[in-house]
Length: 205
Ligand code: SAH
Image (cartoon, rainbow, N blue to C red):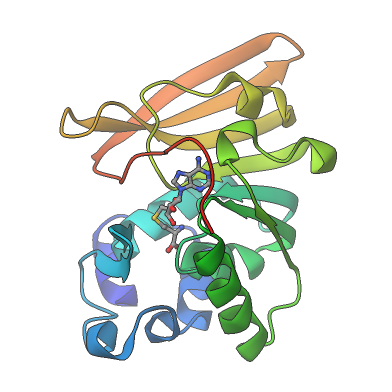
């Protein structure tokens, strides 16, 4: 998987090290685990998917922006817990928000089993982020809204970045990076064409 990531253009060594440190098979059920290191997304239940390794690495590279380590990062869309586990290798604290309660409990158990203790969890609608823990050096959203939620931009530290797939389902989403340059000044850059599940409002048990 690592050689493939390098050939796909992932260059940041800390990101490759983090991908190497997290056993991907621990984040999918037994039936899927034989495919855990293949270049594909995997079903995680409730119509949700764990992105292919390249997309996880790519988003992590954009989150890190060349820095070796970050202090506070927010993830919206915990899902299997895999992306949070990769971020936990590179950040002092990871805050992760998920709208489906059952996913959150499962991710927590997986992280504990791997001895990952620097992740905090919130069961809520991630459109609103996690205001009481803001500001964040980076926010990564692993489901796609039609438009960037303004609350998430407001929870960035100055110099911080929001990495988010944006666009309608089936209409081609763009991996977007929004950097907060000053209080009311943001810069937007567009990267890969991606296909994420939708960011949905409200929360479920
Ligand atoms: N990062 C995950 C990917 C999971 S797929 C992983 O590593 O496995 C996207 C996840 O986003 C799903 O679990 C879905 O329930 C969640 N999600 C969708 N809308 C959300 C919202 N508004 N707030 C929080 N989580 C949301």
